[in-house]
Image (cartoon, rainbow, N blue to C red):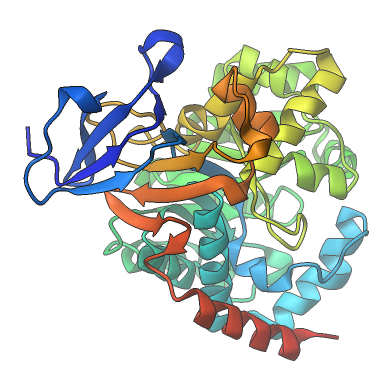
Length: 433
């Protein structure tokens, strides 16, 4: 076993197998990007010169997984609020993207998103947008783990992906091959924005290359009704007929589902990203998360984009998700520890990532420390409840991804935050209607 060069030193670590899932006065050793040791500080002697990140007074947890984002859209934050989804998308977002969408737009939008996500404890994100190779470049510079989805929307094919489907995705996968923390995916927008013929081609491509597919599923009642009108079945049944669920898939939203749909998704252990604040804001419905998990689906929490949600705060999503499910199914139907799993281990599995999401020897060292010394954090009887119902992004003190320290004592170490904010303000002045 390699000798640890970095130690997460002190605090209470949320570790599987420990009594009540907690290890007090923890020491976590990291080498070559992985966790190599977990124990108590009194039981270890770090090598001379090893770096220590002081996490005294913190909860130490796996980094959070953002199951569904469009990070390039961060430059459109707040541009089109208080509109129903179809109006928001077709009358504002698509035309704005046609006018302003470019590689630089995506690069700076993604850097802005990475700064916000690191500050909020997110270490991994599942993205979908145009010019996605520039988003992957930004994530690589930030040091974040990413599933990068090259998007296809026939109605708004900004970067020309639809003109050469297979070639575009081959070139995209090659372009991100040098980024060690980036996994390529294909990201057709939705059933109503991609033709049946292209869906068939994408499913064949996924089967051939074992590339994950990331897309929007059953986000609105209109989407389901439109599919039933065209094809005589729900989107879930339509995709089952095409063989989509035999491939690695992460489906965003999954709000408007029949009991039969839920059983299909569960049977195939499909990854689902639940995005509660976006669903609420765009006036859709409450996703059947409790039933999906019970059926066998793996459910992550996602923020969606800042254009439809206005922030990338998974603490807020966790709080809303738990309360929405209590409203739908009854108090305690989705417990705080379940939601914590969706933020971490289950969220990673929903993206097809086995190597992260849990504090365990041999796993990737994606770790955050949450300060619990402020008045709103005292007392803590249950750390999982505090994370879901009491903590916030402002409480994240340190962030480590793949053994690299991205934030220490609330200071970003891999990004020039001031430059990013200046560039974002410059884009806003250009875009402002």
